Image (cartoon, rainbow, N blue to C red; front, side):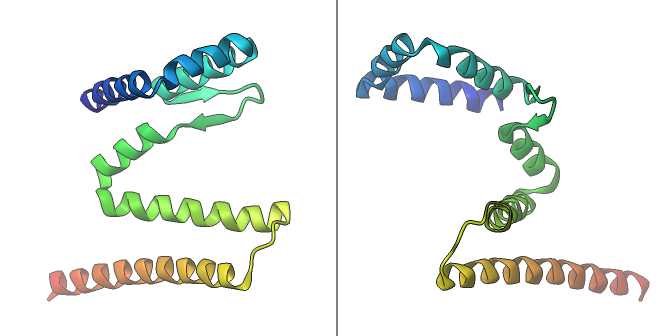
Length: 136
């Protein structure tokens, strides 16, 4: 993980220099100094992984979670968790905030839900078959 972060910092620095975005970012920060604390907070929480914000909710940041999940459970489990989280975020947004989606977007929501359900069903079936093979 440390090696990946070193390369990410290196590549990001090169891109910031080549595209001049780094200079523009510094100019923005000088013009709007109120963003310094949120930027530092974001950077610190990305490095630490857990941060208690002003409302005392725990915020667990993604990078550490992703590395842990892939290491402990594999890439397939990580993609399933990520897809499930995104799916429930969309559904929550629709119902809690009253966002409207088209009928075709509803078809997409249903397809994602069906695919997640099928994935869980297949995992359950695989476990059942493995358990039956062990008992025979």
